[in-house]
Image 1 (cartoon, rainbow, N blue to C red):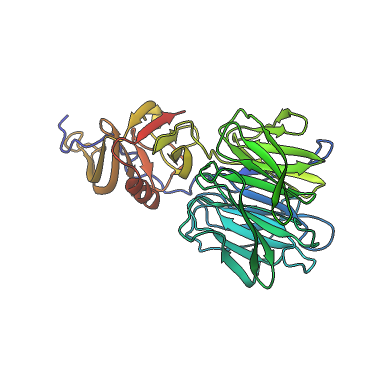
Image 2: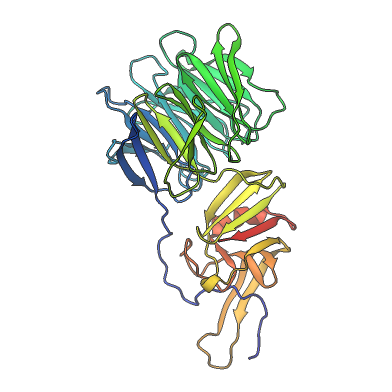
Length: 435
């Protein structure tokens, strides 16, 4: 066999059928006080990390489920009935945002009807938007909770903290940001009511929180030993209670008060921790992460995303063959994730590797012999990261079947995703391939 161009065993099928992207639906589960599952139903989200809120939007005494799309999807808010049927949806941000959004619902304006409030997750600016129950933007319902350049993501909590019978909005930076809590009241627009640091200003673990019985409960996020504080907001914030609660995980996904118990979920385990009783319960979910919400009578949860890595390098890449997904982390915090196509017949080399070279163009071609139907020449392809001899992470313009094994060993990526990771990664960035 004579090789015309020695460039890679990467090509999948020469002319593969173009199919839709693989779908990895998550399940939303609604559970009552006694542990009985009332409903469970799938919601479509390829990456995970959806945000959930549970609130009565129709003033009929029945709570609706509000879902904020996760990383990699358009930033859509979807309102569902408790049987999973859709009431409506809307886009609070440009459809190209792609970083995932957080949602919460409460009566912020004091009109007796719950509003829907959104914020971008990590990668987006701290742009808070407020919508009525119909998903319509309200006047003056758009503001920045922190400096516009902040990209750590904003976590939300909502409830009456100052005894004025209406809810206040709490904004908290996500992992990588300082422990800067801001409390906003509504006065024909968001007005900054309180502004303080829940932990040392140098702490960069991020915060999640919940409002319950007039208290703000906050937890550090990116740590295995989160400190949880219960704070009362008077003329100045006062700590009512403080405790360290170790978890068998890399970080906290959400905290919630349900049936007078403080519950905590993690970013890389299907366990609900009962902080009040110091017990835990393992749930049967498809992915190892949970996000929780409640309206006080029911607990709603869904699978989340793997937000943190055990590595603390400046950059590391995880390619999960079983999920056909790539995860990119920065100092242990997830920056991006998307579908890939790995090698057929387990051809992608497992193990720990690193980026050996960044090549702006590679010519993918092979010659098996004169007249062979397996000869190909796919021309010069942009954006290539070599992590193993003749094995690359690269753009694959010849198919759109990401989410399924397709290649001869390389990791195939869509154009937009490949542009992102090519610019982000550096020579030396670690690449772990697991199954």
